[in-house]
Image: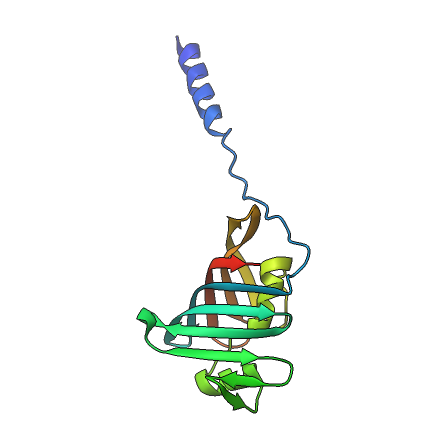
Length: 168
């Protein structure tokens, strides 16, 4: 009788180990589309301050338009960048995006790196940022990042992106 109970116990435990818990390996997209956009939510923790915004980024080659929308839709900033100019709310800025954002907010968001993260799965994009893709989502039979975390390597800056819509 003890042997039968022991066998039933062993079989019931072995049934639990048969559940596959491996993470889904994302399918890598080969090429970055020339025109595409992504939208979602951005949370930035800088020192003791928390910033939250909605974002919508449209890319055309290396040019982009970034729309940041404040919490509850209050306040918007439109940033347009191409090879020669940076416009913030349609006003020309004589600076790079990184420099302008550091001057205005004390931190910057590496917009130019987003295509490599979304399509090429690159997480080692430069020495300033450590990047971790926390989860993936399937859109049009392709797995794209859903939650991406950026941690600045030398400053107390952490950024979390939740990508909700990717159109390529």
